Length: 234
Ligand SMILES: *Cc1c(COP(=O)(O)O)cnc(C)c1O
Image 1 (cartoon, rainbow, N blue to C red):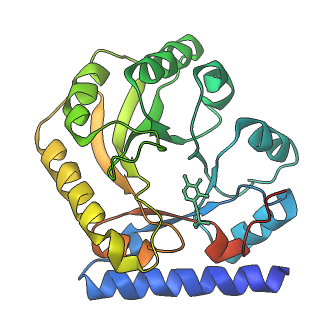
Image 2 (cartoon, protein in one colour):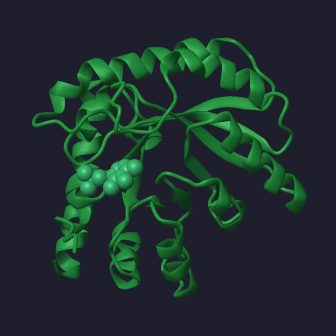
């Protein structure tokens, strides 16, 4: 895919987000487009930033560090959206403005430990396995209040919201029940006030279903192939 394709795709995705937001009576300005940049090199990432994506989201720590060393993300905040192992926390804390994928108490504790040593507070989202899929990480919806209470005891993390990766779907509407469940979970858990928690972000929706996610309240959508074209796994 050429640069102009990337620019055209970003414009298309943004227009679709705006249309879905308008249909839902939402202000499109409150929805941010995260480019899921995995397997795309620094030049293509830069092109997406030039084309107007709001944020870059990476999945793998090593790949992110390599691209970061090339200045790939200049001009856009960097988020971590992939599964994070505890032994890689050191490399992500501070570099990424937001970690979307906290899926255990022990990971939350490790992030706080590392962030505290560096004298910073790391913003994170809790990843919810909303489809209860065995193959996917994430906490169950029932565990969300427990982790939010635990976060209150961790000085160097701040939980900013929830993230979900529902099952792969053929049509955007198929995931509507999961998105609605996440929206409810987000609202319910926003009502109770916890220390170190500020429920600002609901991260959901990918290439196949981001318009539906926007209709159901997402304000961070993570789009990869819809911007960069199909990924070629080798
Ligand atoms: C790859 C990825 C995406 C984007 O997937 P597409 O279907 O290509 O849009 C979103 N979120 C996460 C966590 C990903 O790993």
